[in-house]
Image (cartoon, rainbow, N blue to C red):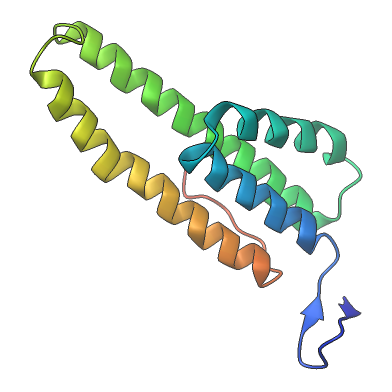
Length: 129
């Protein structure tokens, strides 16, 4: 740990990269899905061995959670297709349930991860490997 400009605040090595990883994860879910994911993959590939432990933790966790979020949306799309396609009434039911439960959970977990990164602490998404 190195001291920051504020005497009460301590900056942990890799904290800015950890915050960037968590921010890209949230941007992937909320703002720019494809571009943010590619930027996150690029950061992970570039820093996966050279980053400090805090940054490495947040990079790997956000990439893993992004892959899970992508798998979940593919699963929902496949379920919609099996239930009658996109012209079915059940399409809206499935999408509303997905966005109010699964997607919102991924966003809340990302916000928790961002707060942990800003605090200089490690974080593990509660998702299976």
